[in-house]
Image (cartoon, each protein chain N blue to C red):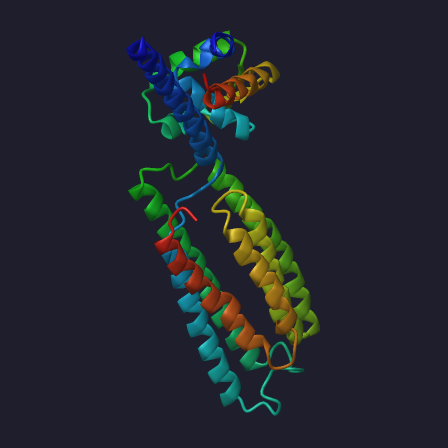
Length: 99
Length: 218
């Protein structure tokens, strides 16, 4: 049981980070505003969670402009995908665990 | 001793609940970010009724034109009947597209879902590509005046569009698409084109729309 809990990734403790990563697993890129509407969070809150995923190198950031409007897109990195997949399989094992 | 065991047991159960909540959250986020699920039942019913009205008018016009075999088999593309039928078809198409788009966007707003997401963009693109391909074939059918090919081509390309778009919206759309494609078989038989179009574009849409009201997460 203890090993299983340790296999969980601390980065995904937060529901918001879990949500960001889930959405990025099934979409190539998602921009900031789409994530904000999807998760129903404030700008600041979302930005800080994105920052910590970026620091963990689980997501990459692409900045561009549409006319004068800045557009920030996020993408899951290879490392991030791997970490998320092993987090999911750890969750599945924990659910099936019977003492 | 027993109580300690129960205490451990219940914390374990509680955290196991939390883990399955996490997994449910992941599943729902993946679903909501990749599929547009706010399809309104009206988006099926209104186009279905418009199609039936259009086809009824078309049948009436064809009968009134007193063509010998009842159907437009070899008439010129500039014949007034063809122009009238084309106008009806385009009017039904435009009204259907606008009404279903409006009903879906209204439902999305009511459900507080975003109305411009990667899922919607994907959905529109994958819907439009087979329809545009079909439009090219329809253009050639007009050019060569092969009117008996019109119904099967329209039904099968529309069915393909539905099959493709089902990846980005309700999965059950897939089966509606398969149904439309299979209707292209009887649609090619002489005299069957208008009744089969009424089934494919009229009744199938209405039935599917009503089903969506009863089973919103189909």
